[in-house]
Image (tube, rainbow, N blue to C red; front, side, top):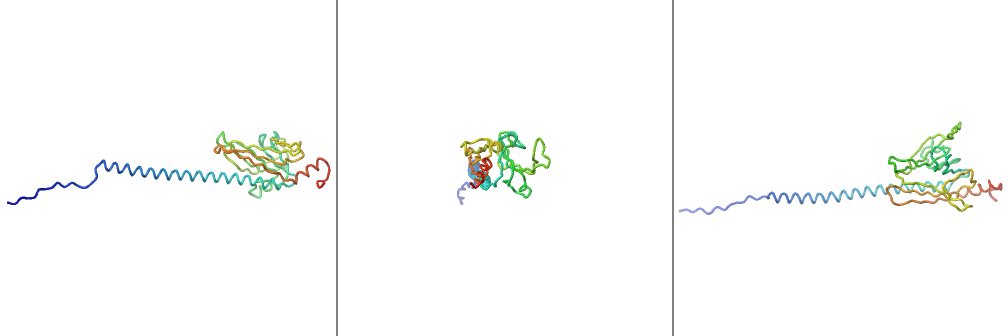
Length: 227
């Protein structure tokens, strides 16, 4: 009599549902971690790039002012903080009678005056510093002596922007400057500004060309400038 060997039950090789769910959860955890690291690195890169661009804009802005003020020709007239400053509210800075700063085209280079004004941005809390290049009207009007030929935003997202001027004889800082009341030009000009998204406060003091000082004193005293 032939006896068959006992048949062993063969289990199919595979994963149970619980094992599949656990594997999927682990994969999702790994992918989520990788995505979080990549997203954090991307946001950090964007933030650093914005900060670098902001620093570059402030640096260029300050360098433009320094180069301009330290090479002012005689005859330049500064007006600031006066109700009669044209094309804007009191507090704007108007520069007349000479070469103008922040030029980018030949037409702008030939402007008769330039005005710096802070205006409200798209956000009511935000300010924008504008540079406006002006051309003197052939027929001066009672409201304005100039017409606007070009304007450009210099600094955006500002929280505040202030100018101050140092009078060398009185040895005091003034928030306004009237050239009709002060024959001497200021010796220094100070810019103070800050941004809404940056807790730092920026402050820069610029020396104004000494060439203006003896000329202004000579005009007051009636003596030659070289004495």
